[in-house]
Image (cartoon, rainbow, N blue to C red; front, side, top):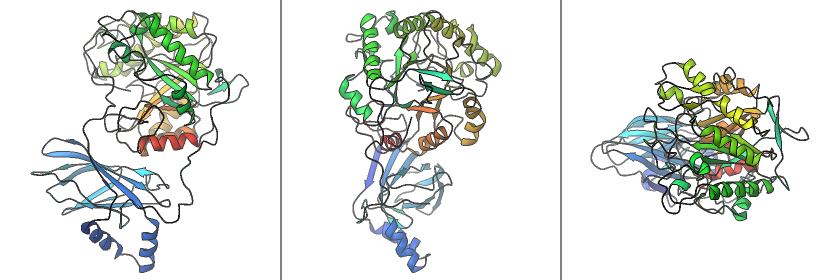
Length: 521
């Protein structure tokens, strides 16, 4: 995931003011509900009221004194909705500026948000999270009551349970025994028997930062219990971000409690072996690397591997992949993601797309990057020189959200075991099905594609639902960010769990877990 400062967890929540409406509706909400219902025939009013049961959570992500950004997450506690209309009122001077994830309007103090075509349908247990920015002066009191389709969101559940409750138990689990060895056949990953296989799972962050921050390797347990929790979600793949200098033991100035060198390598090997033994494929990712960079998108000014750099460095990255490949060759259940999120185009202020794609593939001296760069071709060559046949992944530009010219600039791989890495967050540039069809789809028609990171700017799951629906239809795998209990998720990041036992966050983790439980490989 793109990081804009050296703390490795921008996903860690900022202070967020929230209000969840779970009690009796206030008088203002009832008045708003009545106004909405009077426009419907009496029979329709009764049917609508019977069908809507909901909970609303109001959160202010950022308040700068004269304006703020707010999200209202509405959760469907009853039967499925085919459309929705949210209503609430402010008590102060709050004035709508702009909104998204819904069509926003304001009349006086009354705010209305109606569904858009892509998020109109909300299943039982599902959520949507319309968000907007407002200006204000004076106090900024939060609204206290909300309606959906004219009915107060009082947190009550229907007396008769919904006919289509969200799944709670997996219809399938990761395969018994070790994870399958995988190779590329056409545009699919397949097992040794030739069966198509998708990597669906999670990122387990911390291997990229804990070692240089005095926190060991995993910033938490890496034992059988954590693996069992992942299996309970039907996780079939775990992506492990790694630190180049911790692996190579070139890191300097590591605080007490940090782990580098042989101890770091052993921890990575042991956890990878444990996951594979439990039927879970592992993607090893070079996340943080050496090289000083202070240009656009820089996360730190350090030469050391303490943040995300725009490209891997020629000094250490080939050696890193040589050693990783030597360690894991012969175990084709392990895949290699050669570099997390390249952004040589941003480093050059998007001045020359051809130069950026050439830098990605060939490395060398790249515009805007002050250290010698290792291109993807040199890293593929380093892996293959060891005799390793593990599947390797290479990304695109713009923090690997852009795969528009991936096919034209793909490195050569003598084994044919090459696939494309793609990341998709709601704040990226390519966030529509039209863009995915024209760019990602073109790549997926030729080679396997893995969405190594997916996420969104709210705790809802409406955006990743779109990504996963598209990926499912195009045989693309995905691993969501992130399986780390870093508190509630918010606009700064995407947290799937509240503890190492796998308790999902609301509603981002809940939505992702439900989707995984319904998937076949």
